Length: 484
Image (cartoon, rainbow, N blue to C red):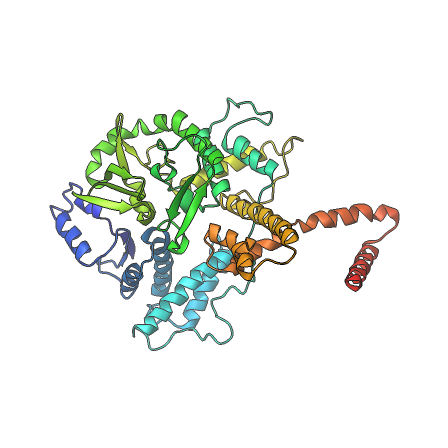
């Protein structure tokens, strides 16, 4: 079996393979409303493997993102189909033992078994697929006997993996890891990283806005009002198509973060985009070439696929943003803020390579007394979002306490709702439920700091055993409870 993805651009390229059939292929894709990126699994005879392909089409019709959702789903289904084929099975005849055997092959027997979190995501896709097969009549019943437990579950219990940085850790990550500086603040001439101003600007934007990687990495120049904003002004724009679950919310970027982005746009970005102009000029027929930007309405107009089009920024997904360009001084230039060598827009995997190199650079000097403590696991850009949430939540809770002291408990219910720190942070982050934001409360204080302090006061050198320390701690807790 092979996996392909629909692409209007590729079938329209001059090639003897398609022999002028590209226009007809595009017409049929448009007639069926099939998006670019739609997965297609075919057998040895290049026939679609059903009902998997019909399921992908169903997911596309209900609005699942081809790049962020359907692509990873396709690889999961392809692996499952190949495993079932080796056992002489298919989706319509698979049994519970087949699926349990597949779980074991993925989590125990393969050369690099997947972890519990990765497998649970894969199992969720498989469960969704079989539920749909039953709903649509492709199967009479699911092969899985759910009962109290799902047989595909890894049975591992996990909390949210909330990791955050202190101020010294963030500066170390941004300036030394991403920016190529030494610990004393001077520039390291041996730094082999590329575009340090871009990397530092991305970190500042991610930290101070709380946006996810797919949100801040795909931001466009007009959204940050680059070139149309006075110095010292913040920026606000609407997120939706690039947001998780496409949940609409307003992104706010403070002026300090924008000054970091402005520095990159002024100093480094022209050198990055200059070599692209000739390549983009040859690809003009497949690009969205913007001719007019309407800042007041948050929309842009241009030529795409041979006709004039208009889009709201918030409705433009990552794939379209990657194809969006404008006429610059030297020719066509990407409209995305963060671009890389030979690419109109840096992908998530490119940003992963950047942070991996940053981590290697930081760990190389971690024994220096001037370096802050590093965690066991390398930093993720998502940790900056967690840091934003915790710092904002801590500030708002302190402010709420001060406000409560002023009003002396006389605030109305509406005031409590309007100024509720959890609700404010949840809205700012685009959380689907207040319960998700509530998880952050456990991280406002570092409990290990209290443990360190307790053991510093009651060390074994003073004659206390670890059992004595535990008993005394329990006694203090009982006394504290009684006092309350």
